[in-house]
Length: 330
Image (cartoon, rainbow, N blue to C red; front, top):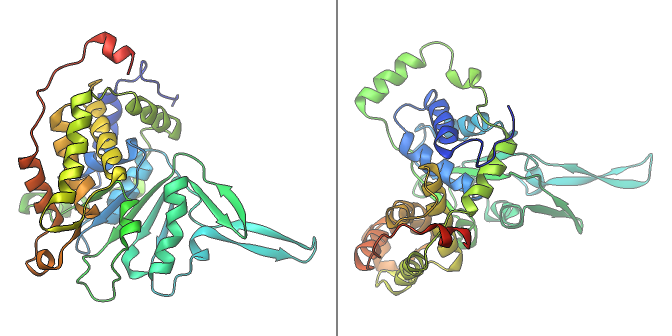
């Protein structure tokens, strides 16, 4: 398979191949798969939060296989050490030197399974890699190969044996998504499909890492009008003023919202972002970044409810398709 360029492979064909391939493993989860793919196309990391057994791990494995990316899985446990993820320097008596042995983080997609079962110290081992694409060990910096994506899963925080992810860690995830339980009919289809060999074992790539890098570059070129940038900034700013929020979304939230909106537009074959793209991206990008006040937590108010309030309150700009000159200078 040859590397994809924007002119050679239109976005819908790339997107359709990946979504159809993942659908061989996950029944009826096209919406969450599309949002996860948008996060990857925007160059971000994904947090999947849901009850056990809903398909979080399968989604990560299926995306890695479909995109042709190297895949590593780390099971996060209370006794996991940071060096178990990033790697360690080993002394070689024959040469009298230390040699760095890379950890499983040196991959294309890292599945951090049940990330909130590890201690905050171990969770923080991912911060540098997720933010800067590198690992520093014993004062030496080692670059990670692009594309690099962390897909982390976590059980709801009220489950036994879990640690709440710190705000700084949550902010590194571009999107927090929920896979959700299947409908009755979807579950029946799933039982029939998985009766013998699980399809994940036969899943083959429908794209290459070069395809993904080209797609990510094309996504960054999607036009965002000035009024939409103001709309995005206004949504983030409004989260900081909401009465239920102690700490709202920062500039990284605004950047993430723009990036995912660009990816969603590109996935639909458009060269410009619309308000609908921003609104579709907003819950996954903003909700997990909000630090709610005590009274909101006591009332069981989720971050998604605050985002819904913000979307209703912020004036929506009039959608105007950009002229070619505007696109040329974007």
